[in-house]
Image 1 (cartoon, rainbow, N blue to C red):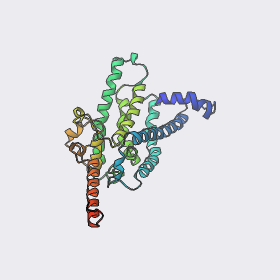
Image 2: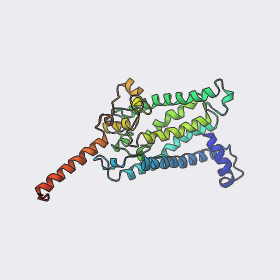
Image 3: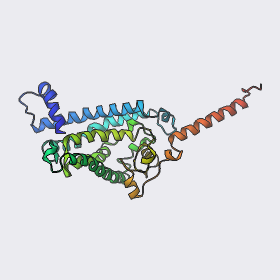
Image 4: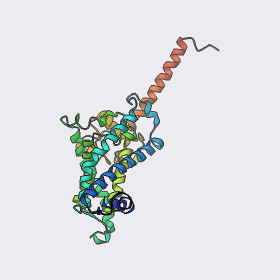
Length: 293
């Protein structure tokens, strides 16, 4: 995050916000700046990605599903907007440690033993590490002593929209993001790679709530997509994974998505529409509205 702080200092905070006497490496200034970056950046990322997903990807027929709440999108956005500032407090504490040089983030790939190969390798190890950690954190959040206090709020959205992606209790949201922040304190990671992956995981979080249940046939056994995660919202104890189905298979919590078996939320809507149409025809006949030719 020090790259973001460096450029926002250079082009915004130093020339326009802070007095010249307040140096850029002042710890209090850095914490304030990081709080502003985390909150403004978090809101922008949330509203831009979730908004685009809702307009261009989300199947709006899902808004007619019987388990969609009244004013659900407004409620999802309200929870997210209220949670982001609270989630940002422990997140900024970690960002501050990164800025002060306590992590294994690095600037120049040429200075490392593996060079650019290490940069590409770290993308895969980051995804694998965080997928494993989030699975077990997610299962912990479903423990009966924890669930109702933290994670139940996110399951309020039985059929989620893209705006549900960040609609968490703030402690829940931070805990599930923790592996992303842990990784660069354990393993070397290029700063630009870290920034790119940070954006990617936010996009992915929106994508598993986007109501687009299509996955290429060859990837269906491997990728934890929106179909898997929607079943998690509906059925609770299955498909805890973030990116892949591996840990659900290892942990015995994998379930083939209902959408793949022709009985997902969209299939429910189609069945209800067919039933209403059939009932409408019966009502017409009963009321004598259909005339004989």
